[in-house]
Amino acid sequence: MSEPLSTISTPLIEAFSGEVALAFYNFETGETYTHNATQTMCAASLIKLPLLVQTLTEVARGRLELNTRIPLKAEDRVGGAGILHALEPGLEPTVRDLLTLMIIVSDNMATNLVIDLLGLTEVNSFMQNLGLSQTKLVGKLQLPEDKQNEAQRRGERNATCAADILGLLLRLENRDFLPDNLTDVALDILKKQQFTEALVRYLPTDSELHDPHIVVASKSACLRGLWHDAGIVYDAQGKPFYSLVMMTEGSEDRSYSWEQEGMMLIARLSREIYDHFVKGR
Image (cartoon, one colour):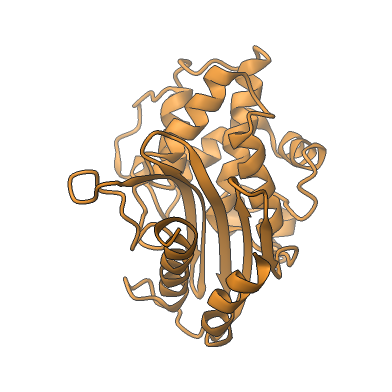
């Protein structure tokens, strides 16, 4: 298996102007393929995946409840992705609402409220206990400099690697983390992803246009010169085909355009992999 996927991926990776990491797992055969999968990169919004899992773990332990309401305050506003920063203070979304916004529109304000619920030290302990050895939360997202911690002011960034994220997705799909009802919550949220311009871009997910169609549970991330995407690809009945994590950074294309180099690399390789392992069989 590794040779065919290497043949597919290598030309696209070699043409990329920055660094690329890839981790792939085929649920039907158990085969894997990796490229730079243990290379530590800036996590950007991929850090939100372990936060989702940890929050639901705290729900399972009885320490948090999904229906608890969290008041929004003006001082909690941060920039970047999301919608909460554009809404008036006083709104009280539930913990489940925060998780949903954190994942499907990558809401940074929601993410920071989740971090407040969990605690920075506790988040890093949780991730290390899961074996996510390259994954670290340095601090909350999009904070102005006067609110950053010392590590952030030194230039440290939230970090992860493709292997860590793939392992997290596989354990989630294999239901190793959580009770079934909370695993369903996590996967249902990931399947509602609205940022689909990379890994999902060229995949047949529209049930009205494609027969058969597929379903994808995913989370993307982007910053200047960086684009990541990670997901699980399912058939229409919910059977998983494969999981794919792709991370790119250091691109010469520092735009946020719909044709950004890292985004398009992920989109093209995702389609090549789908054609080879699903459509072409």
